Length: 86
Image (cartoon, rainbow, N blue to C red):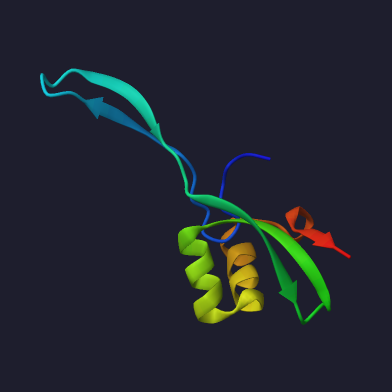
């Protein structure tokens, strides 16, 4: 699975390192990803998600169920991609 946040859809971007002499070399701006377990009370199970720091704040603000439904609606993840643990 690639390094994409399942809640916000964030992924690595390509940019330039710019030196003092203004030479430019390609680089990747990577996402601040965490693999976290969340308890999903609606389904009475634990789910494993790859989320960014911004995704964690969204889950804290609107709740896990609403965040997953919003991510599926926007096309950032599918229900099949969410790993259920126990």
